[in-house]
Length: 357
Image (tube, rainbow, N blue to C red; front, side, top):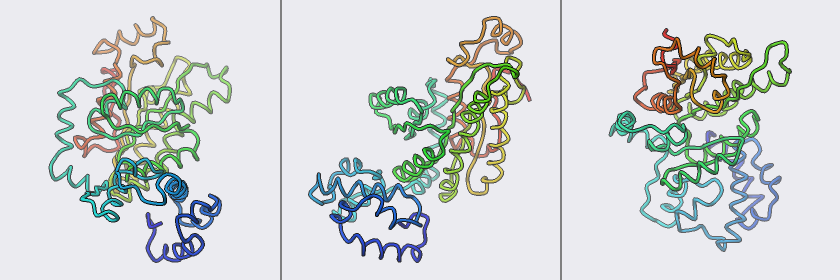
C-alpha cells in the first residue's frame, strides 16, 4: 500500500482493509472484487490482485505459513528477489541482504562495474538478437512480444545459458495490457531501469492504394507503442531518479521512402522528435533517451526487397555491405550502458555511412 503513497494517506486504507479482512483465511475467501474495492484509491492494483492470489496459495500449499525457501517465495505472485530477501530476514531472521535498484546503482558507480561490463562489450562477439545481447552482458530482461512462440524459444535459450529472462505475451498497441505488464514487472523486479523498444512492422503500399487500416496499424505498432510503454514507465523511472530509453527508429524516418513505404517512414520519423522531447522533459529526473537509426539490415523484414533495389542501395554505401543484426545490438547495449552516460536526445545512425550528418 505504501508504494509511492504517503503513510498518512495509507493508514485509513490499511485500518479499513484489516477491519474488513482481518486475516489470511478471510483474504483467501474474499472475492477479488471485494479486495479491489477496499484497495480502490491506492493505485497499483496488481499488488492487490497478487496479494489475493498469494493468500489462496499459502492456505492451500503451505498450511497458512510463509515459505522459508527463497525459491518457493519467488514462485508466489508478485514476489521478486528483494521482497523474498526482506521476508526471510524479518520473519525467519535469516542472514539476507535486500538489494533494491537504488542500492545496486550505488554499487555499480562505486565499483565501476558497469563501465567494465561495457568495455567487455567491445572485446566479445556480439549476439545479433537484442534480447540475448543484453542478457549476455548481465542484464535481467523482460522480453515482450505478441507472439508467444518466439518468447518460449528465448526463455529456453536463457535457461540453457544460465541467463535471466522473464517473458510476457503483450500487444504493445494495447494500452491496458502495457500498463498491467509494466506495473506487474516493475514491482516484481524492484524497478525497470532500461527500455529497449524495437516493435516494428513493414509493408509496401502506394498512397493511392493504401487501405486506412494499413496506415493505422503501421502508426500504432511503430509509433504509438513507444508512447504506450514510456507513458507508464517514465514516472516509475523518475521516482528512482534513473532510467534509459533506447528506441529503434530508421534512417527512413529522416530521408523518407520512395518505395511504397511512406507510412513506415512517417511512423519512424515520428519516433525521433518524440524521443528527443522525452530527453528534454525527463533529463532532469535522471533519465536519458536516445534513438538508433538503422540503415538496411539483414533481417526478415528486408529480405523481401528486390535484388536490384539492394544493389542500388549498396552502390552508394561507403562500407559496401548490408548491416547485420549484431550491429544494432551493439549500438543498443552501448546506449543503455554508462559508457554513454552523457549521451542524451541523440539519433545514432547505424547505416554504414548512408547518412553522414
